[in-house]
Length: 237
Image (cartoon, rainbow, N blue to C red):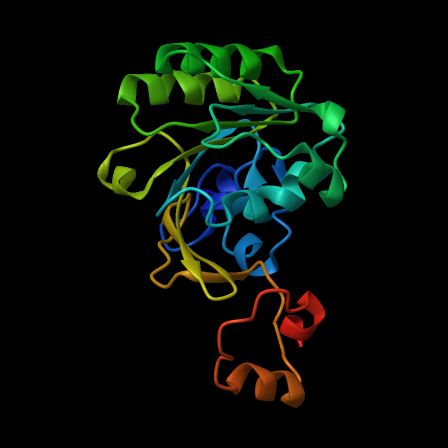
């Protein structure tokens, strides 16, 4: 009598899963630092050695805050930033608890140079994380970057505009980020497993609460224009 087949695909092979289930693919992962997000990701965290496509409504809405816990956890190896839209704040990195000597900033004259640099950095295996900012990128280049990422154990995130969501990508994980009052709304556009209809609310910033006295001060009518020579403490009150 033949052996009955298991009803669970992952018992046949760990790389198999039902479309309605999160994949349990073998590999390396690092915790996101945000339980609500980690729960919805295959492996329970950011996949290492893979391209992660992060699409943002605009740069500076909190994408680095989102990656901050993972970056700090991987900072025993250098972290490289390629073509960031603004110069990195090394003092802020130190305030986060990172070692400024482990943070590298690479500027490339052309997009092709940035892509080549990302490939070489990934294949070197020497970096804990690689973050690449680009406004436009061809599918052929995306495939090359994914292949380069698979040769590493680095956290590799490509950060680009939200309108790239309509472009196909070999990245096994794609997220769209939009700002919210206390952080971000993260929509999972692609993952290994079932789809997720509602965005994940990620709280990046603590509540800001004012005492009743502070509210009273703020609710007062604005004072008249200060006279020349009026002291700063008087104005501040």
